[in-house]
Length: 527
Image (cartoon, rainbow, N blue to C red; front, side, top):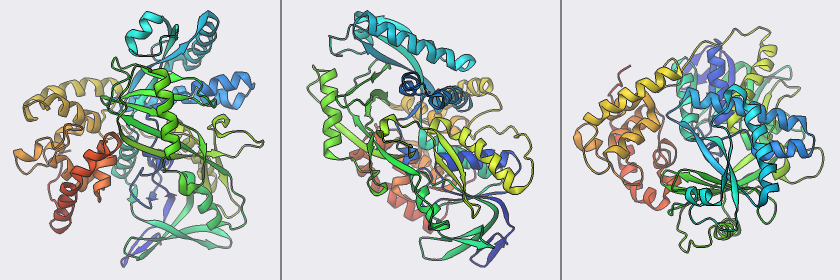
């Protein structure tokens, strides 16, 4: 039997995935496309760890390209090429969640500009047919136009393209799409033990918040827990050696707009040799990230020193900006595979590995958001070996909110915008609310509004992000939201934009969650 839980038993699964972050979600999505019977267990809310705490970039990795040539490192060059292809894949598959972003890399003098023009030209070439708008040089006057207030000693810059996306929403949509295709997804289900037969993992024991346990069995078990992967590996085989180095990335959101034209800034070298991004972020400015080796328990903590470090460098690059208002801050731990030699985490390639322990547990190690699908496909090769079968080619499976092709998605979204003009409440926030609904739900935006019990429930609750009660009802009923943090941090981005606004809305969110638990919502979205 596969699952014994509350007196109910189900058939054994082909694949049991532990962890609902980006790598686990991508694997569930790719596995069901190939006809496998899949279950996924997540200890909390999907994506609540590193997968919702990224820099929100889909990128090939400009710094990895530079390191690849400086160190003659083919592994980093391969990573860049893979990531550039995946960057375009996500923009095509979910154009409402992911878009291209122009970023300025400032230079001083003709030699430095030539150096970066050549490097970013190689970046464009590596992308090939998956390339975005090619890199180009700008002079001091043009640089001041796109980034007003930038330190005037910057004589020029090279503009290049990468992608910007909503990490938490993409994570969620991968899982929802997999579930719609037959996967069993269980949140708040923490794995506390492995079940073995003749020394091989054949299932797990999991615990729910009320203390009850469930037993899940599968032909193949995969550990996709990110920075927690070593803990699961040790639970399966107590003598196995740790494989991961955890590096903390820190981000601040400022109320002030440093990127009013929509062009971001890459600071190539801080005082201690790291890179720093200054990016447009929903009408505000996102600043990050630092690479600080840390323990797993410290991965989500923003220290005062790190915040001061980022603000100090921001002031150096924008010396005329006297006001710096931090409205949100977050950190996330990055799972890096420990290098063979001693070097800082900022110089560790974000490569991945599919590891198989002697007990049969497969672990997904390393990687990054942009290439999580590549990691999933690599994992399927090991899974197919354990299952003793050849997996078929993947079935077409557009993400929820997308159409059958990128071109059709774009056309349908245009038609949807026109329809929403007629149903979204008129007022100062109407167009902002339409943008928000499309950016979060794509072609499902109308179904979100249909959850409102009356017209008042489609009225925006906040000028920061124009969410409404109807949207919360949809999140609770169809997107597994169970806490105010789920609603305010991951189903929408209010907490990542303005923590004070999220605190203001928390009582209303908790009240609706309580009412929904007492009287379940029965409205069904139209197909």
